Image 1 (cartoon, rainbow, N blue to C red):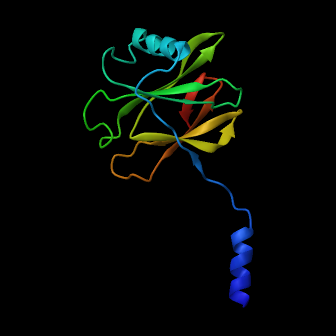
Image 2: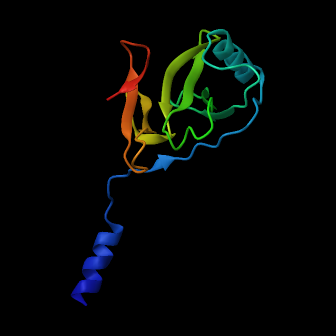
Image 3: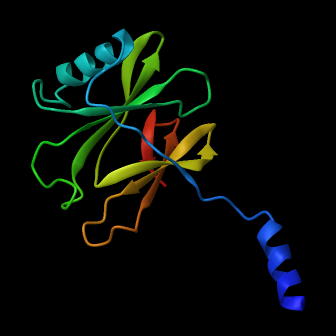
Length: 147
């Protein structure tokens, strides 16, 4: 009886959340803003035109305007080598800007925020699928940086 009561108490106690919002990637842009962001990435040399890409839209700072995480695999097996190209883009004064540029196996959105912007789980260890680095918004640099 004591064990059941203890189990019930532990089951309903709030625990710190370490959930990760799922990123849903698409293989095409869905509107003019995403298209403009993709063109900006190509013009800056961050993406190669004509090479397949994926894009996920997510509101990283809860302002009601989506930011985008673009992924382009410049080499086969980039996940195994933990060096797939991810670029985070957003809008600043109506124009697309780069908010982060990193190489990783995969990335996820953390439920914790820094400066009002969601932190990122960046899985960039070639030899371990479960080890990640936390990236956060750096106002000084105007981009996501390792914490």
